[in-house]
Length: 263
Image (tube, rainbow, N blue to C red; front, side, top):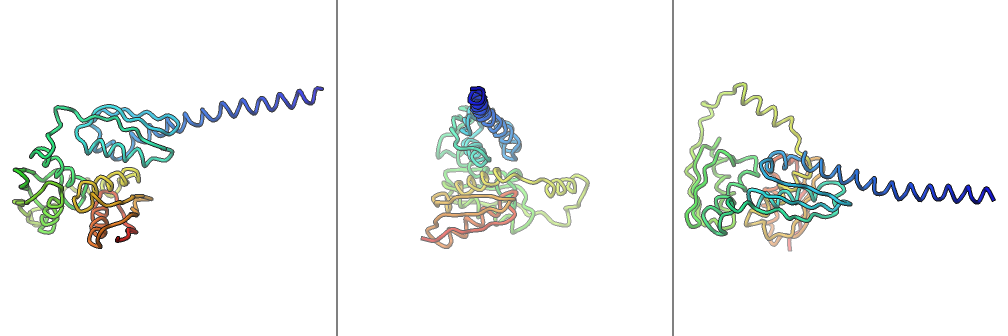
């Protein structure tokens, strides 16, 4: 009689361990998701001034709080969705009412243009002044080259709502740009800093969404070690090429595998 009782005791112990280990594992995963989200490039760079609470339960994440604008709400959701272990995201973030411009207004268009420029590394999102008047966007500031000035015009012209672009940016003289300790340090930081894959995926998705030529495409984005893979369908070869071009110009992207098909 002792052996059956012993076996039952062992079995009960194993069952007990299973029931306690699974919740413990789930808790560890949820804690890791919450901490990992806060450490991503997107949260530390673009969302650092927002009030975002991240709660994960069994891999399902709920985002609550307030953000500066709609692009931040999208960025937060896409970044968290790309983290390992995340099964779904319930985005309950709200824009701050005092910062929310009326849709289709000049302020709304300026925000969209600035956000679009901010995502791309070969243009200056911070150094470019953006003005808008009934669909006409005026750009001011300094471009590092003629190519950068032309690329800025191209990107802005492809933002939904923009009808005309007046690019009044001046092109700096390379002879006037002398390397100093600050600029050298900045270049060094840029080389050293590695942007996480979840942030890259979120930035690429949001960038494609904000460009008129790619916003309607059925595109899936995956990133591994900085290399972005695009899947989905494009209506034209030009649309496919633009998706690859926009993705390749996002911070942190080391390469693009454009596997999209043309309908």
